[in-house]
Image (cartoon, rainbow, N blue to C red; front, side, top):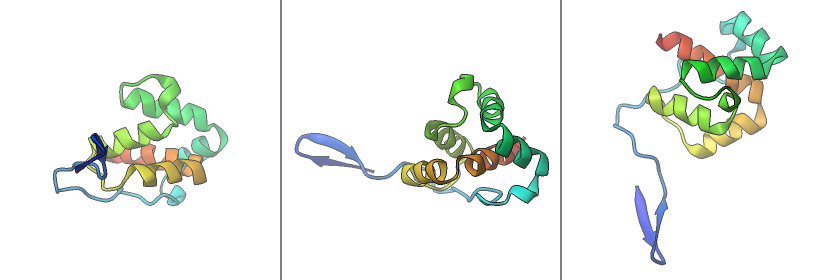
Amino acid sequence: MAQFQGGHVVIVSQPNSGNSRDWSTGLFSCCDDVGICCCGLFCTICLGCQIAGDMNECCLCGTNMAMRTLVRTKYNISGSLCGDFFANICCLPCSVCQMKREINNRK
C-alpha cells in the first residue's frame, strides 16, 4: 500500500496476493536438517552461495536481507522487510538455514 506524503510516495506495506503462508520451518528449527544446520553454522557464506545459486542470483548476495526478501516473495511467505532485517541481524546463520530449508522443501 502506498501513501502520499509531501509530494512523495511512501510504501507502507508490501503487496501480496492474499494467499501468503508462513515459512515451512521456524527460524530456530535447525534440527529439522542437521546437514544444512552444520553448513550454516560453520560456513554461512558457502550456504549463502548455494541459496543464491538456487535463486539464480550472484553468489555474493546469498546472505543478505534482499535474498531473504526474494525467497519470501517467490514462495509467497508472509512477513515484512523489517522482519527480514531483524532475522538477518539477530541470527544470520539461522536465517540462512531457514532460507535453504524453505528452498529445499519447495523443490
